[in-house]
Amino acid sequence: MLNKTHIQTLTRTPPDQNRLARAIELAGVTQTAVGLDLGWPSSYVSDCTRARYTDMSLKNARKYARYFGVPIEVLFPE
Image 1 (tube, rainbow, N blue to C red):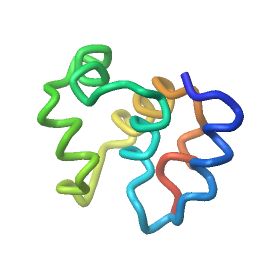
Image 2 (cartoon, rainbow, N blue to C red):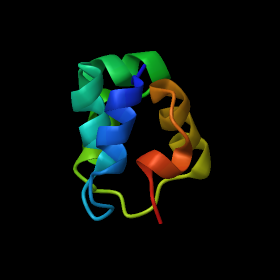
Image 3 (tube, rainbow, N blue to C red):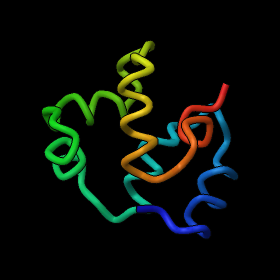
């Protein structure tokens, strides 16, 4: 879903900033659309973009990465 330019922009986003929120913005989709596509409530997506969860399951992180077509490390750097 993200093109090469979007991915480069995303990788330049500081790791301490929420790259998931930036990916949603770059992709031009809404949190509601992401939630519907992944089978999650939009409130869960919203909470993830606002970093209300300190831990996310690897399964869910992989789903986000697949959705945006990026390696997991791009969305969730160490």
